[in-house]
Image 1 (cartoon, one colour):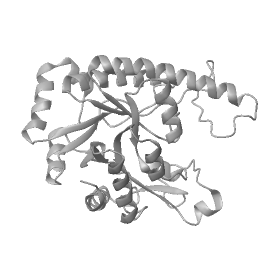
Image 2 (cartoon, rainbow, N blue to C red):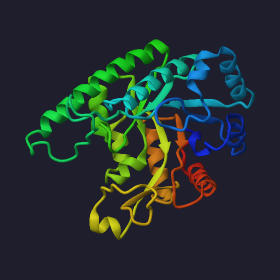
Image 3 (cartoon, helix red, strand yellow):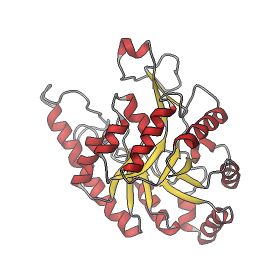
Amino acid sequence: MELAICTDVFADLGYTDMLDKVKSMGIDAVEMTAGGWGARKHCNTEELLSDAEKLSTFKKELESRGMRISALNTSCNPLWPSATGEEYKKSMYQCAELAGKLGVKKIVAMAGLPAGNEKDTTPNWITSTISWPAFMAPAYQYQWNVTIEFWKEYADHCKRCGVEQIAIEEFPGTMVWSAETLLKLRNATDPMIGINLDPSHMIVLGADPIAAARALKGCIFHVHGKDARIERGTSDVNGLLDPRPVTETAERMWNYVAVGCGQDLAWWKEFFSVLSMLGYHGDVSLEMEDLTMSVEAGVATSIDALRQTISR
């Protein structure tokens, strides 16, 4: 496995300054947002698609530093029935086109979340037992129908562009938030769809990412190096679901934290050992979203922990 980094953490830097920053940390692979709701500060997709000279310069900056793109990220909600949802969808299709021009074979995305029926406009994450109230089951089935239709069409588009893998990040508040839901989407669509295994999202829902990895053998396409911590005291009283903004760290039931500040290094060593045993030898892309410390401290802490635990 090789260490990569999601570059949105350096959104305040320009493209070449970001590459120099990452290179100075001894990292040669970058995951950049090229669609969706990410910052897209380092990869202007529409510009690169329309200007061959700028596309060539973009690639040369990577090549001159001996760096590569581990994946293009286009995480968002393309299933939101709104103008914004349509913009997200457009950006996802453009991301695949850019991946083809760059020779990038992997896209990271999220499954999205539809509304509860064809007349509604509000995305609805159904987490309660669908047998009651009675309208829940039809809404849930409608959402899966919409989701499957979109991803069949998008997978076909990606194939035409030369993309080989779509790594869906299992994310609370989307249709794919667990191992089981990822497998449901994959089995209903195309084997080019697999998981971007982000352990932090499983941790905050009470799942075991190591057990989930075993269930996902053969369809782990990408891994995010990202940790989470269940906060003692608050979670003991209120459980794990938390609608508070992520900025209210002191009051939340859980928080995203730098790697090693949630699960200890022994856990991370087992996690990567199991991934290696299951056949995953790809990139581990550091995604730093710890709001309890500075960006520099969070990145340094995470890199230190990952370098001690990644199976090489």
